[in-house]
Length: 207
Image (cartoon, rainbow, N blue to C red; front, side, top):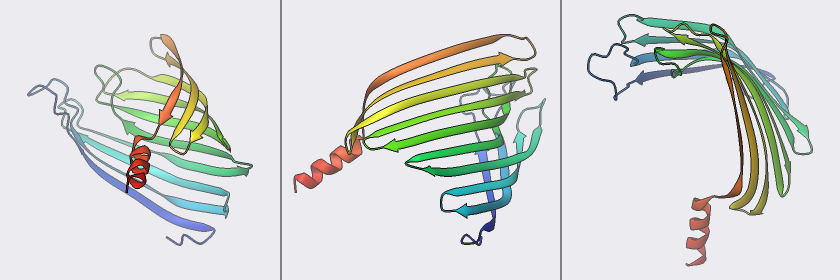
């Protein structure tokens, strides 16, 4: 509402019916559920290059499980998008969501995310990097852990529909209850092509 104003109120709402169709009949852990969440807040547009969203998010999930019938969660919800100039964009996000389970006995994960992204466009190059922290608390399971993720990459545009890229990502997970942890690293490089753009170009050229 009032999108052209410096301070504009907003409301976002969603309802979902989550069906785990691969479960056995009468499962010991039933993750199927109905969920509703909403975010209400204000958008502050200081300029065409700087925009801030400040709000509160409330999420409620009604499980079909016999042991855990429902779960509710409320938390601050914030986003910042800043175009710093010369093709450089910075984004920051804080939010709390109910995500799908990562543990054996968890019905779902209650997750707080803190994320920062940077991207720079220098034709024909695109460079980006990101880092985020997830505080994960499985619902119905006795775990509490942190996930640290970071990534960076660069791409060189060969043509409108193809580019050469290289990317790196890392992860470190620390479980607070058992003090166990693990880490992972991935490096990749190759050629990325948008097939639909290629097909469209070919179709236009053959007319």
